[in-house]
Amino acid sequence: MAEETVAQKSGEVKAVAKYIHMAPRKLRLCTRAIVGRNAIEARNLLHFSNKRAAETVERVLVSAISNAVHNNKADAENLIVYRAYVDGGPVGKGWLPRSRGRASQLHKRTSHITIIVKEKEVK
Image 1 (tube, rainbow, N blue to C red):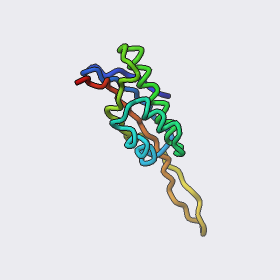
Image 2 (tube, helix red, strand yellow):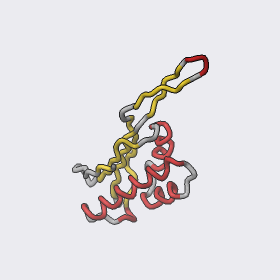
Image 3 (cartoon, helix red, strand yellow):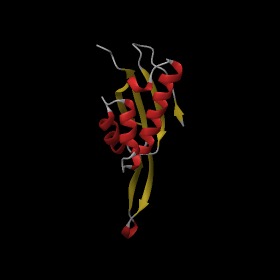
Image 4 (cartoon, rainbow, N blue to C red):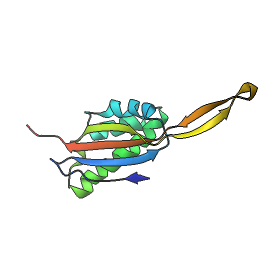
């Protein structure tokens, strides 16, 4: 379900989850809340959030942190959420029966979540 890749430029590490069965609009609320925060702090924020989307975003964030620690030998305490964004995936369409023999179209949206973490630059 989650495809993980490593970005090659300037110590950035990313994790991607594709085809998540949730509307991008709902996921963007969670991703916007964590950008620029310390990765551990962002994980705690998502873990104790009461949004259903927060669980999925937290899973991708944990994957990004793990990628940075294991692949780039980064320290988890020094990671920040550099970028986090949600793109729309394919939309499944169906029909919902309505009154008087009519039908309304349903849109079952999917999303692609990308989270990029980066080590804090020491001044």
